[in-house]
Length: 95
Image 1 (spheres, rainbow, N blue to C red):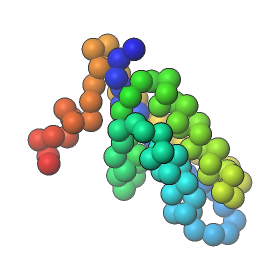
Image 2 (image 1 turned 90 degrees about the vertical axis):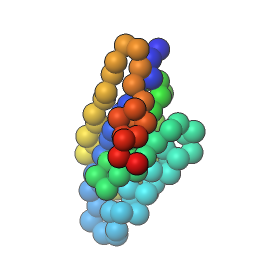
Image 3 (image 1 turned 30 degrees about the horizontal axis):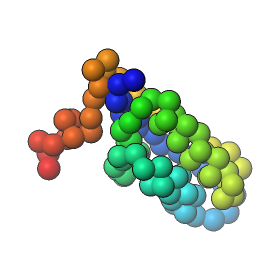
Image 4 (image 1 turned 135 degrees about the vertical axis):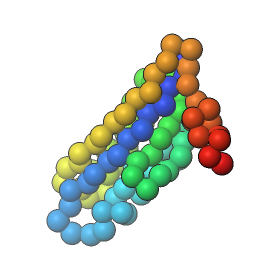
């Protein structure tokens, strides 16, 4: 299976508390997963096998709910190329 990039944004709905703390729970799931990732101001981008990355997104949503969100809206973007695609090839020239 080729390497893909998945960018996702979890937007928690909560009546009280800081939504940033809830988003931190999603990022913690990504961090513990062992995949390559980057946190940006608007989303987190991961690199790896498609099925694994989609499972991480699911776990991240569940972590946000477990931390107190009543619901989440999650926006997902996938960059797929049969021979694979990396984060570095897309952003190296900007570093």
